[in-house]
Length: 189
Image (cartoon, rainbow, N blue to C red):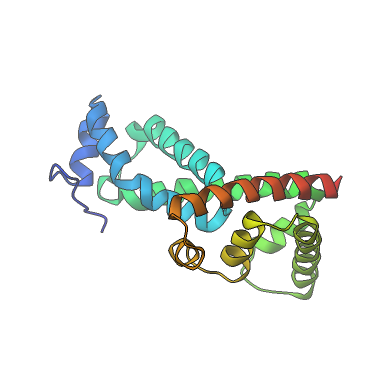
C-alpha cells in the first residue's frame, strides 16, 4: 500500500514531508517501515544477506540524499524499490565484468526475450557454479545451501527439517554464499 501508515499513524507522504524539513525521526520511521521488505527483495535477487543489507543501506542513503528532489510523496515505497532495483542491476553489471567481462551477456540478460545465446551463457554459468559447488566440502553449510538454492526450500522449512534455529540457517547460508563466491571468483581467474 503506497499510503502505508507507520506505527505512529503517519502516512508515507506525511513522513516524507517531515523528513524534508529535517526531521530525522520521520526518516527513521520510513526506514523502519521499509527495511525488512527491501531486504527481502534484495535477498531474492542477490541470495546473500551481507550484499542485500549493503544495497538496502545504499538505497536509504540515496533516498535521503534525493529527498528534496522527490516530488511524488504518495509513491515513496515504489520509489525506494526503483532505487534498489537500479542498485541491483549496477551490482550485477559489475559482477559480470569481474567474472568474465561478459558485458554483452549482461545486456542480453536484461532483455525479457530468451534467445539461444542467453541459454548458452546461462548454461555455462550454471556449469561453472555446479563445478564450484561440487568442489565445496561436504557438511552442514553445503547441505543447507543446496536445500535453499537448488531445492528452493524456505529458511523456516530448512530449519525444521534440520532441527535448527532459522538464524543458524541464515548464518550457514551467509557463510556458504561468501565462500562459494570466493571459490567462483578464483575459478574464473
